[in-house]
Image (cartoon, rainbow, N blue to C red; front, side):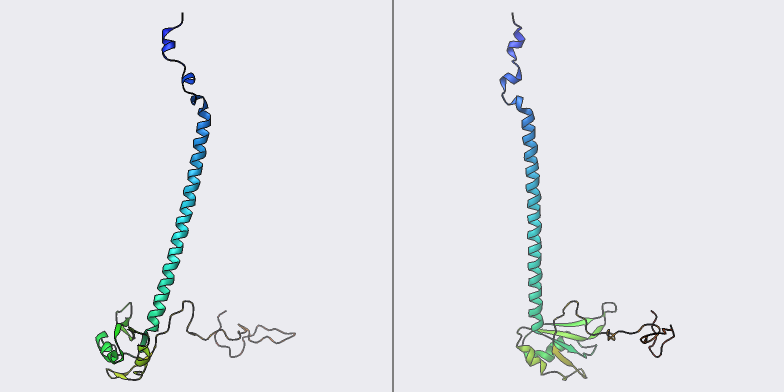
Length: 192
């Protein structure tokens, strides 16, 4: 006779046809996990691209805003150190409505630098403000010019420039023979 316990619990492989395919299932699961990981990596790249595009768009908007503000602003030079923004606003009020008056301060001492910017509501008001060039504000002739847009990397011509190049130490080297390493004549101090 057969064992009664063996009949009650038949072999698992006979009951579940998928149990024998355990190796296949694990391979499929591993493949699915790889595909999910690839899709997550691709989604991360897409999010990164989207963020960089949004950042570029924001930077472009900021640049456009700056150019717009600069077109409505004037530079006021030779401003007395004791002048307040309210006094500058009162001086230029005849030109039209003013958005903002900025007096630049030294970042270390907090003292005024002697110039200011005035931003108007309309670009057309800048021309009216330029008429006040050389007018007197608190006993000083102020200089009024349109605000220039700052272009990064453009220098204002500081220093002596590069010119045609120098001869370094030893002065001009004539063509041909002798090239003495003499001291040169009148080229100033050239340490290198």
